[in-house]
Length: 104
Length: 206
Image 1 (cartoon, rainbow over the protein chains, first blue to last red):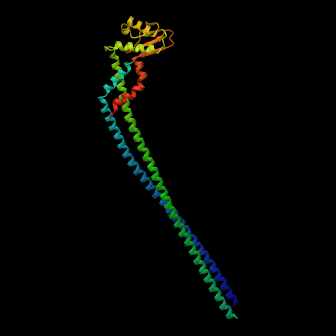
Image 2 (cartoon, rainbow over the protein chains, first blue to last red; image 1 turned 135 degrees about the vertical axis):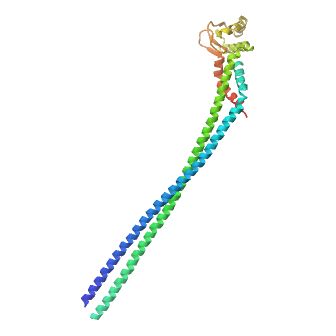
Image 3 (cartoon, helix red, strand yellow; image 1 turned 60 degrees about the vertical axis):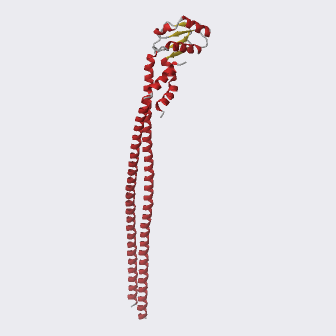
């Protein structure tokens, strides 16, 4: 009878041991799944952030290109204006040069 | 005795099971907590990385924008300077053409004499010879040479070699050590930098 009891206790201990191992293994699996999930979260987040970053740069570059075109246009207009205002003054300027060169 | 053994055995087995169940639950609970922490930490890291990437993109984009705009401003400024430079050059070209015709002006003989006198003044009374265009030699009368020689107490002669120029004269000491080039072309070269700013003022003043 005692031997039977001892056997049952031994069996219960083995079951407990197995259950613990099983739980440990299951817990390790949870952690492993969580690590993979975390990697995915980081990867997706990086992709998302990089896409947003590209969009930001693209948008600002477009703004800058528009502003730049406007500056170039203004420069061209200023160039034409300079040509216009100087047209009638060229004779006066060249006469002044002559007078400076010939005066002592 | 055997009944006691059976009863105690059952108690021990129950205890072993209870302990095992509790420990199992504890292990799984801990594993869940670790998993939750890993996910939570990944989310925080992701958020922080995202913020960093976007802030860097904003910063880089702003720098790129400033560079593009600065380049455009520079290009625009260069364009205007290029146009101004062209107009100034045209004006000097126009003046040079006018100088080519200036010798036919009635003022020219007096101007040539003044230019020669100015040149002689700067060689400090050393004997000198004057070179002019072949057609201008008649302007330099003996009286003119005599007056100048007396004024500066020196011997003054006209060189046999004439010069190729739009006008003006070249004065050289007899030993050749001092040469004053007062031709129109050289005078223009000498005065060009100074004249340039005056020309620009006349041309571009609003």
